[in-house]
View 1 (cartoon, helix red, strand yellow):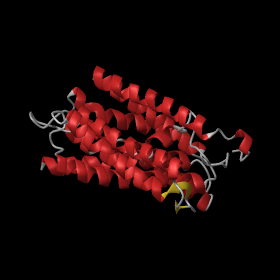
View 2: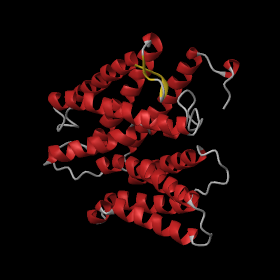
View 3: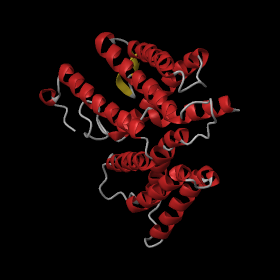
Length: 296
């Protein structure tokens, strides 16, 4: 990572790159919702988690640090099959057990691989802990998005695709509000020791834009997301915004601890896949639980 000012893009260029990357990302969402094919959802999920895992492991600067990559790939593919199996008519009990089975399988495979080597003190524990944490942080948490997609809604309870769209809109509006307002008028640092670029003005913008996205989604898709009333739109707008900010800070903690600026560069102006989904990793579980409570 270079700290040279000459290599740092201007705010205008960063904004343009970020806008173009956002357009491409939203275009993929529109295509997925329009096509509405299980294989497409599965493919997008696998692509996101595998690239996300690759970026996560690449954050560790020590080249000799064992990351157990093939084990996480194998278990991630099996986990994806379990999550999306209900879309093909599989027993939903398997989906409910997916998290526990996946973590158990990963630890089993790591143990089989690790016994080939001698003891290495805390280094061995660190390697195993990093792999398991990365799998839980990226694959398990992102797995709540397809869990929302798989909710067993009855007639009159809406379309699961649009609850996912609602999640993405509110979460990304939160990120957008924090970025735009923070860039324009941000002065007072929020948590400078973790994320120097975040300001309280940007935080206010995040809340405002999240509410804008929440109520906007309600008025645009209210017949597709009838579980979300105006009251719920207000509660979820604030709640998801707070959680989205926390999710962004979690990744900032990881990157700052490992002295990395971005998780990757596949999304100009945004960073890597992890920079794209960091907020969704926490907002997904929150919306899933909220919808379960509404469903009774």
